[in-house]
Length: 259
Image 1 (spheres, rainbow, N blue to C red):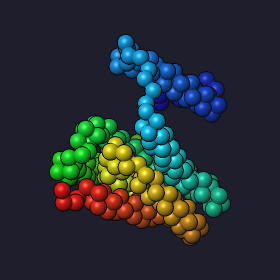
Image 2 (image 1 turned 180 degrees about the vertical axis):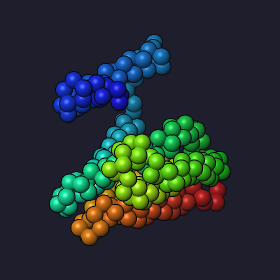
Image 3 (image 1 turned 90 degrees about the vertical axis):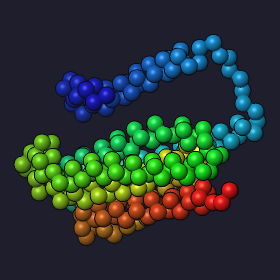
Image 4 (image 1 turned 60 degrees about the vertical axis):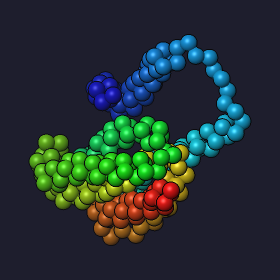
């Protein structure tokens, strides 16, 4: 999808980026829907779920939608608050540059989460299996994310030079702080949240996310005027760590119990 945005920028600037991005998402969405329907649902007729199951599906979908919506706010609120509370566009530009590499760290844990999710769905009633494999996935994800984040932390300056040039080399320390924040979010929080969601416990993600976004917005309003973009990084580290611990406590109480 990146190349379509690049093409859009070449043809029509910012408007082209937005339009080509939306168009490519729509085309790919329809295309994958058709492919999935032909491959997995060919020959099947629609059979409406029972009333109780339908209600459960709607509730789960609503909770998932709220949770995803909150995470959209998480991603946008930092930039929004920096723009509103800092009367300096340079700070906002530096934050955007510093966030590019840490922001893509989620690719690692998302790929792992997509792969392991179905296995936990299949074995969600086997507490012993869930406990054993949760530890394996958590340790494995932590190790891989730590490795990638460690490279970002060590090579912060070269990454800035590659992406933004010498004029932004001063934001390397900010990139390092945001990398630590991304490690906490993706290495510690995501695995537990993803497995809980896969096994139908999305309500806990929703509750923790609501508390997390309230904390993030409140603390950022205090930290940004004083520390600028670094205040956002410090806030993110604290909030993500709280969320990771909260979700781990929930997971432990639900699945680390005597059978």
